Amino acid sequence: EAQVTQNPRYLITVTGKKLTVTCSQNMNHEYMSWYRQDPGLGLRQIYYSMNVEVTDKGDVPEGYKVSRKEKRNFPLILESPSPNQTSLYFCASSLKKPGQGGSGANVLTFGAGSRLTVL
Amino acid sequence: QQQVKQSPQSLIVQKGGISIINCAYENTAFDYFPWYQQFPGKGPALLIAIRPDVSEKKEGRFTISFNKSAKQFSLHIMDSQPGDSATYFCAASVRGSTLGRLYFGRGTQLTVWP
Image 1: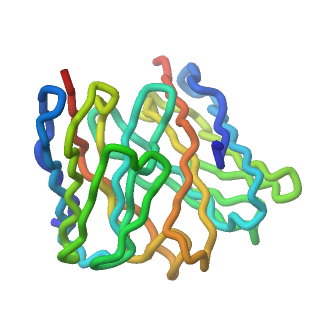
Image 2: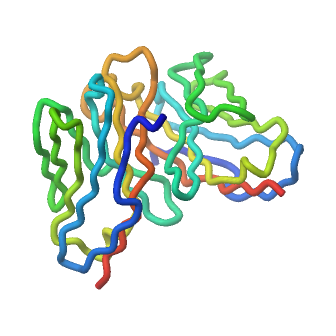
């Protein structure tokens, strides 16, 4: 089944304890992205990657790191989590970057979400 | 600065009614406008999308209306059903941009009462 898999789905951690949220897709997609969803603020892009070893900042990159060493994986790293990073996180991927390619090529497939609580 | 402004934040509609969600943008370079639907506990999924060369696109009960001169687009859900209760996000991007950005609105939580 074509999908984006995120882990963990739920995590409670404490301030300062490094954590990684993994994201993997099995569709050979070039484009991958991380979003956080907060009430009233919608989906805000954290980082995105247009291909292996190509990453760039979104709207809210502070406090996060990413890497894209393989096409299928795009982990989100919180080096020193803080309570303001408590949120619902989504990883998404598409065959091509937004706006590029023909019909369907830039449709984002989202993971099921990772709910993170930082105490 | 918010690239895409969406309203209302929440919407309550009776079964069988019409749900209307509006979005506005300033960047005239935007040329792809998708709508994503998110059910509770799930990730968003593409519902319908439009490019600015047409003023309307219909898929079943869902219609996007696009007004290029006003820089606005809207989602109409005809004969709204309780199963349509979800959060809806509009979005916009620029085809051919060197950046990989899809800008989302803040979302509209739709509740359809039976």
